Amino acid sequence: MKNSKRILTLFFVIFLLLFIFRGQLYNNFVLYHSTGEREVYLIQNSELQHLINKEVKSSFDINKVIEFTNKFVAKQLTFSSTQTSNNPNLFFKTKKAHCVGYSQLYTSVFNYVLKKNNLDNEWKATTHIGKLTLFKQNIHSYIKSPFFKDHDFVIIQSITTQEKIATDPSLYDYLMIDKVTLKE
Image (cartoon, rainbow, N blue to C red; front, side, top):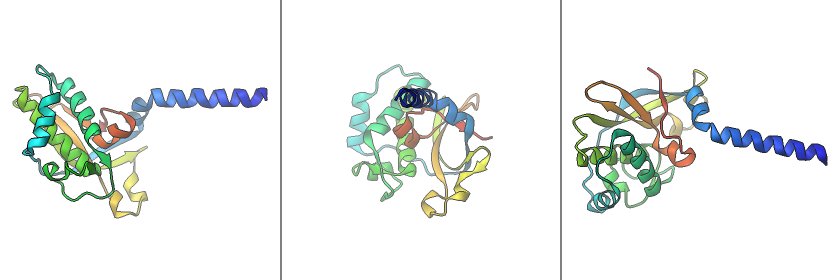
């Protein structure tokens, strides 16, 4: 009985540590490599514009825009293997998307919020098609389903300094990891 209690406590501590350090662990072992870009859509859906305007605060800096957009997209969408369109103005009503939809909505909302805060001359977001590597191995080559042939994520780039910040909105929705590591 005493040994099982110790083992259970050990598993709990290990699980707790993995949970606390999930972002650092993930970013040390998983790298994102861009293989292309998708079209960027402007927010034209008045319902979506209203939702954003209702929640967006003035005087956002870039980190606040990233934080706001991650939370906003996670609140709006649930993951689904089916998606009818890549245009967030169209699929927004279904509230269901896969990694492409999450990334497209993120990019559109992010750029919309930048414009509202007069930061659109300093930063821009683009949706990228990519590959993930785990311990330097392309994980997509191990999965035979066409659904997992690639993975979409977002690159936020400074227009002046060319600094890049990557985020994976579908990963944020499940694990609350706000930034990911780019393989250059």
